[in-house]
Image (cartoon, rainbow, N blue to C red; front, side):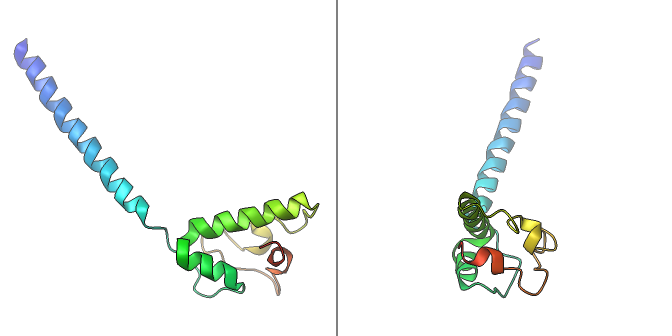
Length: 105
């Protein structure tokens, strides 16, 4: 019986060590911002945000701009897919896709 307890304890220690190492590695990877997909930007503020904070900073900035626009009563053209073809490559669509959001940035 004590062998089973010792074996279970040993497996528990190994499992816990793996969890700690895994979470430490994930935290280290989480420190660096995920880089932006785009390389050229029609709005300088977006490019600057991308350089300083990556995708998360740009997304936060865009969400704040949409929030400002909606608070002012503007809802037309204020969805991500109104300006972007998809939300993986973030390619812009149309002739002036940034026109609607530019004034809110």
